[in-house]
Image (cartoon, rainbow, N blue to C red; front, side, top):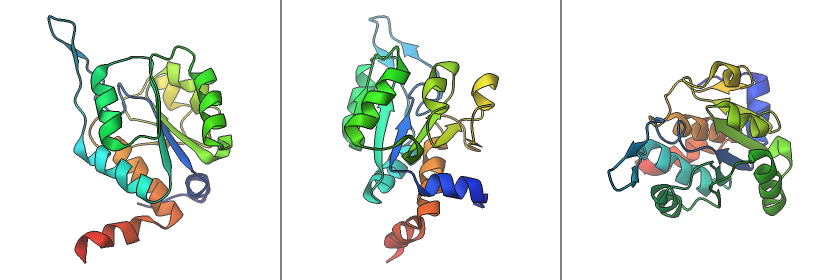
Length: 177
């Protein structure tokens, strides 16, 4: 992965990765059973990438407009540091999150897919979108993942941040010792 100087500078500063869920950590499809239960599919590559990123010292957060129990379970499984669910004002949630985490805007990365994510994307230091994001959202991303939503896009971003911060190769080499 080759990073432009601007992308490397932005990624090097990241202390907090913030994510949307539907259309980012999932493929955007929402399956609803007859009893109203939502079913979502998460990719293991994304999950392990988040654990590696956390182990490197970068904290993680989710800001999502929905409130699905399956997401809460995944948050616990992955040890996500901050979880904002059922959020209609992502800008206010982002301000609260930054205050709680004690980070500046340039120290935040955000990955999203739709216009509801723009209030955070246009303010953070590293705005990222998945390739199938809405066209207007894509225009505001500094980086667009090559991997699709729910199919390794978040892992790609985790690797990118760790590469810029010099923590990726040592983390990977632990697996071949």
